View 1 (cartoon, rainbow, N blue to C red):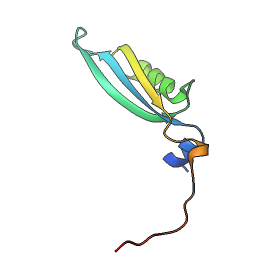
View 2 (view 1 turned 180 degrees about the horizontal axis):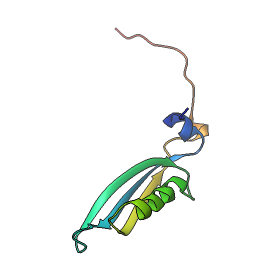
View 3 (view 1 turned 180 degrees about the vertical axis):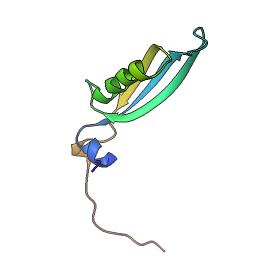
View 4 (view 1 turned 90 degrees about the vertical axis):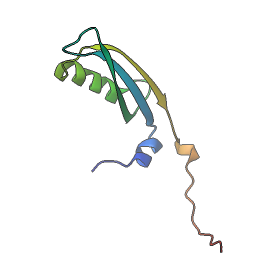
Length: 89
C-alpha cells in the first residue's frame, strides 16, 4: 500500500521539483521543458535520478539540462497531533 504524503514527510522526504530542458526529436535546435514533482530524499534524490534514467532510455528527446529544487515541508519535530474541536457561532 502506498504511503500518504504526510507519512513520507514525517520520514524525512521533501518535495522535489525538477525542470527538464530537452531537444525536440524532430527539431533538434528547439528546446522544450517538462516539469516533474515527487517526494524524494535529499541529498541523494533516488527518485529524481530514477526518472532521469527512465528519460534517457525511453524518451526520444535528448536531455539538454535539468534544474531542480528540494524543500522539506515538515519534519518529525514539527508534527503535533491536536485533539479537540471549537465551535464558533
